[in-house]
Length: 454
Ligand code: SF4
Ligand code: ZN
Image (spheres, protein in one colour):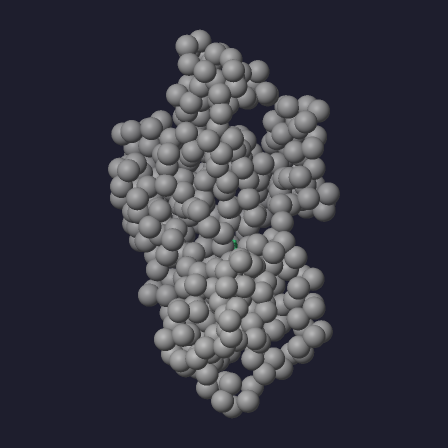
C-alpha cells in the first residue's frame, strides 16, 4: 500500500507500507512493515503503533508536559503530525481531559476539506472539537493577505495568526496546556538553521516544554519532538486515520528546508544523527546558552516586559503595545477588497469591455484537447506546480501586467491554487467560479476538435 501525502508547506512525502519479508522483532509472529534503523527494529503494524504510543507517553511523563488536572488542547490542522498526535495522546492517556482545536483559516477549498477531516478524526478519537472560524470571528481570511506586502510570506503571516488564535482559544475553553505536532525533523532542521545563523535564542525556544510568559497563558508542549517525521505518516496510514489529502494553495513553490534535506542525507550514513544532534542541542548548547545569558544579565534574567495588546488583549512584548497579529490584520483594513474568484458573467463583461483576457486551462492535456474555453492556453496544474517560477516569468514577459488571467478547471478546485500563485507572482489572475461547465451555462464560447461552440 503506497500512500502519497501532501504536507502543509511541502509538496509530498510517500510511504510504502509493504511486508519486509521478515518477522516483527517484537511479537515475532506478524510480518514486519516498518524498518526503524536507529532502533534496529523491524516492526509489524500493531507493534509499531504500540511503540509509537509508548514513546509519546514516556516523553510526556519524562518532561512533565501535563498532569492529571490539566486540560490539554491539541492543535489539530488535519496534517499527519497533529492527527497522529491527537490519536496517540488519547491512547496514551485515556483518562486525561483532552480537547481538539481547529482553526478554519478560510483558505478556499483547503480549509473546508481539512475541517471535515478534523471533525471525523475527533469523533473517531472521542474528544470534543473546538473550531475557530477566522471569517466568522474576525472578518478576514488568510487568502486576504495576498493583497498585502506579505503575499510572498503567506506561511509566516499564517503562523502568527494561528499562534494568536490558539492562545485565545485556550483562554476561552480553559485549556492549561497546548500541545502541537512538531516532530523530530522539524525540531532538528530548525535548530540547525538557527545554529548556522548564530541565533541561539531561537534554539532555546525549541525546547519541548515552554512555560507561559505570563499567568493565564497555556503551557506549550511538543510530545512528538523526538518522533521522526516519517513515523507520523506511518502511524496515520497504519491506523487509517482521517488526514489531509490536498495541499494548501499558499504552499505552492515552498520547498523542504535545506537543512531538513541535509539531515536526511546524513541519516543515510548514520541512522542516529537526528537524535545525536537533538541531544547535543538540548543537553549541551541550550543549558550553556542560558547560563551565559543569565550571567550577562547579572545573575537574574531580565523579565521580558509583557503587556496586553491594545487591540486584542493578547500578551505581547512589542514596544508600541500592538501584537504582531494585530499589526498584520491592520494592513488588511487599509486595502480594498480583492478577490480570487470571478463568475463567468464577470469574465464575459471583461471581454465586452475589451480587456485582454487570457484563459489558462489547468486540466490534463487530453481533456483540454477535447474541449476548452476558446483561445485557452493549457498549463496542467502539476506542470505548473513543478515550474511555477519559470511559467510566471514567461507569462509576464509575453502578456504583460495588463492582461487578466482566468484560470479554470472542472469546478475550480484545481485552478484556484494556480490563480493564487499567479497573484502572488504579481499578475492579475482569478479562478473561474464553477469551472468550464458554469462557463458554458453562462453562454461562454468553447472550442472542440471540430470547431467553435457558443
Ligand atoms: Fe500552512 Fe502556509 Fe497554508 Fe498556512 S499558508 S496553512 S502555514 S501552507
Ligand atoms: Zn493583538
